[in-house]
Image (tube, rainbow, N blue to C red):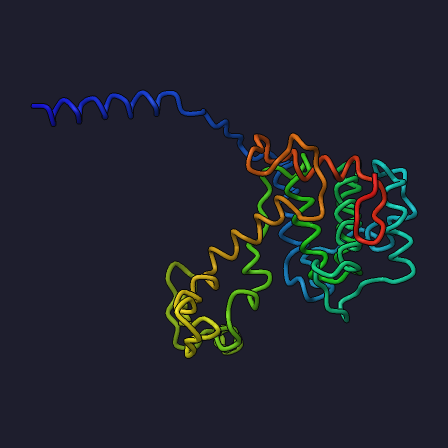
Length: 277
């Protein structure tokens, strides 16, 4: 009888808790939202190939240079350093990029600001297209993803998963070679299911045959696709180069958007990889 009473009590408590759960509002995608979603998919398609857009962009996109339209951006004075840096030392696809390098960080912060400070959707589109055509692609994906997370007009728009854009960061070369093999051979001997080719490619983590020490037995966990994707997006939600107010401590942060957005709008020009008030 006591067990039954305890179960009944827990059930009532659970129902009460569920009844107080936060209601999440939903919104049906309108034409404006679908246009934005289509733009994102188109701009991110075959990111390492030029001129592969399904539909051509207008001449205003092709001829666009952001430093000739500074009035279309909030805080144009905070973009001066990036414009000067880019026009003297452009960072293109023939260069290896990493945000961990101080000099490369300057490009990343400048490009994020360019995207984030665009006053409207049209300016944002033009800036993104310009960067897609001229900026190092890894740098572009990094900055575009961060800006998309925090721009109000990009809320709800879905970006391709990072392991689809940069699969070599998650899978070894053998797995990628097999994927290319199936694609190049037209999925020969692969049956379709609902008009979709389903292929399973088995892959080991990069050091499957090594056991350096006791701790190394769990090394495969650090190469888990989902875990690494989470870690990647976590670092985009809270970029290490931002500088928020004291009230925005990470472990007490009540607003996900507060930490990264505020410094972009208030910090001074980037000098030698540091935000100067």
